[in-house]
Image 1 (cartoon, rainbow, N blue to C red):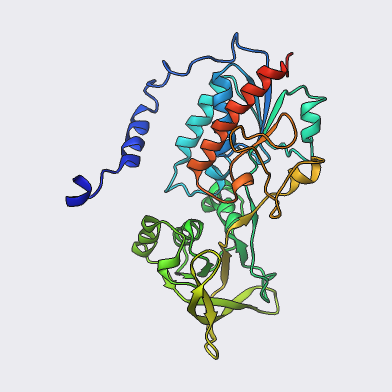
Image 2: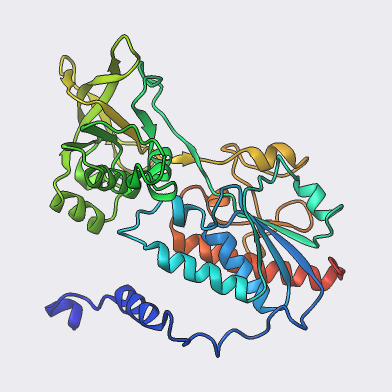
Length: 370
């Protein structure tokens, strides 16, 4: 009835309100179940401190497992820190969750790249962990392969957002992190990450930000709310347009982009109508920064350094749907490294399911005792 006559009840916003009210008031201290103190002697390693890894660590710690989280970057939080802007997800919230994990006994080791400093087999053997969860995400960016992508001023959205969100590029000169963004920015793609990159670029002082997308708004993968926010903030949308070349000067910097108009044909394998170029429709765009937001692919480092680990043709780790375990006993995985780029909620759910599978595996094996 409410949704029919008025706007639907925003359950997510209500949950956010309660969580924000609880922060700092000790509301969550009575909950939590078992802690590491006096719990089992099982040890588990978490590779990656993104949403799936943190969710898995929390579940394991509540069941008395000694948990160590290994993070490649200099702070914990994964995509929650480097990929989601402060205005959408304040750092205060992430930091509070990480602090709660530490209070529960979870050890977090940053600046530690598993696959370089240690390997998964070493974690399971030499270092004495009974089980390992891989939550490294899908962080390798996609490009189009068009001429000019090597010019200075061409970024992946991940790189751009990391420089600004995580490395405090917006606080120059207090933080000496170069961003290298010009005044006229083109963002290629129309998903949620593209909206984030465009809105961050405006906040960083860009005079004009344009979303360039080869389909229409109807086919855009971004949430309607994210699209509306970008429009309200002044982002320009060039629907049914596709870049064909990035232009640059003799110094190697972006000076513009050639774009071709598109039209929609028959549906492709994704079910969306296939964009087809319109002959003779190319035109120049005056831009000095190009940000690619075309999605990501699997980070290959774990598969490359874990002999026999099962992956699919796209490089994502294959797991049992119920337990989250890979084809290697004791090695579990979840989140974007399994599903490809998806939502934070799905990644957290995968981490929790894997934690249950890890508990069952440890119980059956009697593994990881000190």
